[in-house]
Image (cartoon, rainbow, N blue to C red):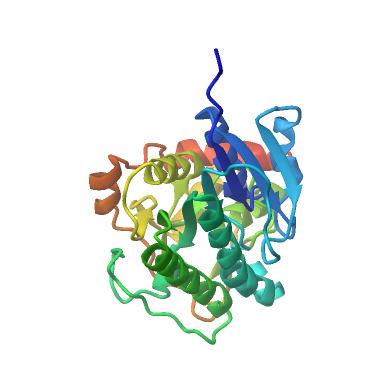
Length: 315
């Protein structure tokens, strides 16, 4: 009796923080996974535990170049992109290219294979929002020529071309707008507040707060986010969906929690706010609740405990 072949997923950015966690989830769901990554911000250490897994393969590939893969592909998850403020400043052109050329190539692969396409977009599409919390029908307040513009506009273009492929070529597309997410496998020198604060606290260094620390963020643990993403990939819905944790913290309060949980005696040091840094960021997840039956389950303290333990070995 012939066994049914497992569906094949391609994950661009598969060696990255979220791409590697998504790869784990897809394998757990019984799919084969081909991970693509040029390792500009990804790390094969994130996939080392999969060595020898017959359902997993890794290809070092820059997705801004033409993508060719033999054989069937059922899903294309486009997660390749630098995703931190440090990256925007250091590799702005690569950031723009992976959001534009990379998305175009990934969509072309999905079209050629008749595969479902899934775009990892971002809450940065809302920019420094004038609406709070942010709903999917808000068009955003983005500075296209500011230092964050290379990321914001790359993702906004990625959404536009994804919808164009859906409408014009009938590709089965999905778009998730990811809000602040944290967990093991983040880079220590990432520029985002979770690894920055944890790394500084574990090293006994002052925690760097921009402005007065009254800007707000909401933090979603990676396993919750990946669960929402997987659920979204399984429904017939094509417009963007927010996935994130709506519980909001000021940066200063978050820093105090990190100090408490690490047992660090570090103090705070204050620096000027970066250009276009969002003052508030919180998702409205009404659509995700109704459409997917999803909401985050992991409390910040529980997720932070796992993340701090991961970073203890890295500092």
